[in-house]
Length: 249
Image (cartoon, rainbow, N blue to C red; front, side, top):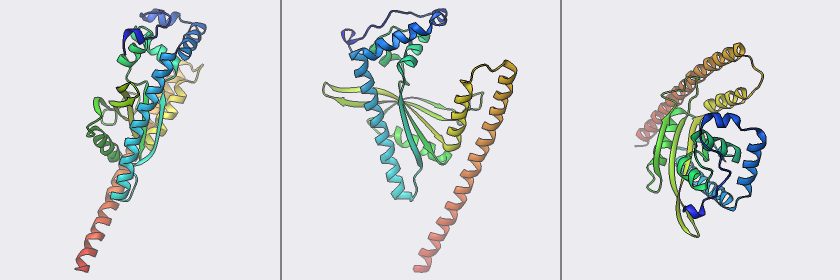
């Protein structure tokens, strides 16, 4: 996107102390300016189209594996485009100008797709199959399953770039893909909700954080046990199928 096509929003800049000085009125004004900008609206439309492309790829893989292995590895797919105020806060934090060009060049998580799988190995299978597609470029991987965050958060993150075809031509768009089990998603949702509860004193906050970490560990153990149970059942089915073939012969 050229400089002429960039939208210039109010020129609030850089440093963290400036972020702290922002009040609700200014943030609201920024949001309104962004929402009313034609270029911004076009950009948001482009991110929504990029999400549609990624969702379609995941759905096709799920359909194929359903036929091939007689089960669906993907339980559900959700998506979102960041809200204007979240984009604004991220630009401020990074000290970036308020332009469409700055957003599309520097922010990789404006468009997000979350894929929920039943088992841990399904996560890596789906991630590998997506990464192998020749029209999708893998930018970054963060494996928070093998290397959980300090608070217990687990998920598999991919930043990908996917071509989207518009009337003016092809545009590469970045999308963040999060892949996790149902249990991981349950924990992450509760953790996110509790983090935004207000008026929690430091002592209670520390206790809650420790309890959430303990829950994350138990959930991870449960995921591993469920994975082992499924593998045993698969082995039984495979043995049964092999036995039937031998008898038929």
